[in-house]
Each structure stands twice: as structure tokens, then as C-alpha cells.
Length: 259
View 1 (tube, one colour):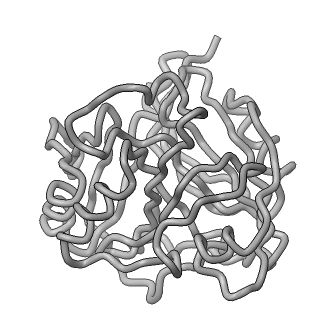
View 2: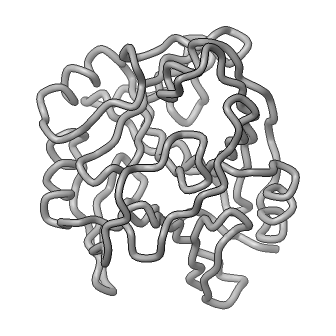
């Protein structure tokens, strides 16, 4: 039986040292052992790796582009998290009006999306009080608890599910978010955004897990991040039952497997 899990999210950066400084100052990350030309931080119990980008591919992809991939950071208190983030320079907002309270039909969470100094999309996520998953019910000293998931924009949900199932991921939730709140949170210039959201759990456990975003309004843009660009984010999997290797899903989202 496969025990594949997401061991790290690997980010390509224009300046690795500056990126490390931002994540430590903004989220209280801690440096940990690394290798293979990367540096690594822990955000809660989850691992981020940083490596040099080899080219600059221009502006950051919008939320509805297949090149888009974000990390969702769970916060215990959104107001405290925003105050801490606001004290650190270099980031830019994606969400138009600050944190959004999503409708009850979409879970009722508060969420805010933004980009780090390299343009990597990030999300702060505060669950509704009565809907906090057990793993995030704890009282850490700071507002930033850890990485819940990495979300990727896909052009075809069924095609993406079929691909990730081959690696052992299983669908645990599938629903559609819609409305002006979603549009404002995602920084999209449409009156109402419509996005199908699918939760995929790795066989080796989570967090983090994988989330698929498939936009119907506005349409998904089938653009891919160029190799070596700051937006060529990669998921690092650990799987003791498999051989090491690397690949990409049908929309170009990169991953590598380490046995």
C-alpha cells in the first residue's frame, strides 16, 4: 500500500536569502536542515523549501490561470495575523478588500490571498469556530499554525482527479464556491466568481493535502509556468513504496517523488 505524502512545497525565488527573511519575519518560520541546493523552513510542522529561480517569467499568473498554485496557511486569529503581516514589507494583496467571510455554503471561513515578494500566492485561512478540523484545534503562541493545503488551478477537474488518483490521492470533498465574495477574495474582475473546489487527500496522511480549483467564471486560462521561473512551484512527495522520480500533471503542476 502506498504511503505517499506531501513532504514539502518547493518555491523558486529570485533571492533565496531575502525570501527566507520574509517568511521568518511574517510567519515566524524556523530554519531546518536542507540539501540539494535548497534552504528549508518549517511553518508549524509543514516544510517549505526555497531554491534559486533561473529566469523571470514576468507578471504573476491570476487565480484562474493553470499556472496558479498557492499555499493555504491556517491562522488562529485573522486580525492578529493581518496585523503581523502588515508589519512586514514586500507582499502585495490579491484579495481586493482584505479578508473575506465566505458564505456558509462555502464553509463560512475567513480568507485573504496575497503574494510574497517573489509573487508566490499565499492564503491566510481562519475556519469558522464550529468547523475547525481537529488537527488545527490547538493554542499555539502565534496566529500562524501551519500549511493546510496547496491549491492548484486546473482546466478539467475530472481529468485532474484521474491523474492524481494514479498517485494514490483520494477525493474527500467536492463542491462549488460562487458569489461576489469569491471574486473579491481571488482578485478577479467579475461580479460573481464560480469555482469548483476538490479536496484530495494523499494516502500517507495530511496536512498538507492537495486542492483543485477549476474556474467556470471567469474561465480557466490554460497558461503554464515556465521552467525555472518563480512560479514553477513544485510539490515534494515522500513515498517509501515507490521509486524516486519527477513529473507534472496535465496542467503542468510539477512534483518530485523521493523514496
